[in-house]
Length: 104
Image (cartoon, rainbow, N blue to C red; front, side, top):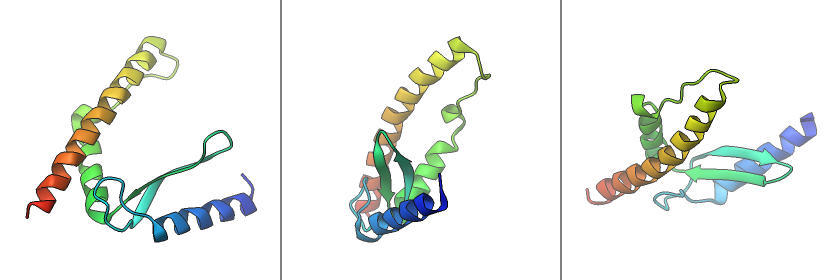
């Protein structure tokens, strides 16, 4: 990626955060994760600070680690299944955390 492309990506990223809202709770976005590709375009997941902290805590849980050796096809297929399960558990965890915060 050239410097001008990186600069353009950062401008789009900053603008998305500036005007966007958290994908989990709807609060104003404070940061994002994701990226850009020629196939998918920009794909930023906007989050507020509270949801970012909750996501960080979720990802650090031991059951969410994906461990496999490069080139291990069986482990790679297992990782794909693990990732799909991870996404479902993450979404449920975030729904619960948002409900808990809103009930306070």
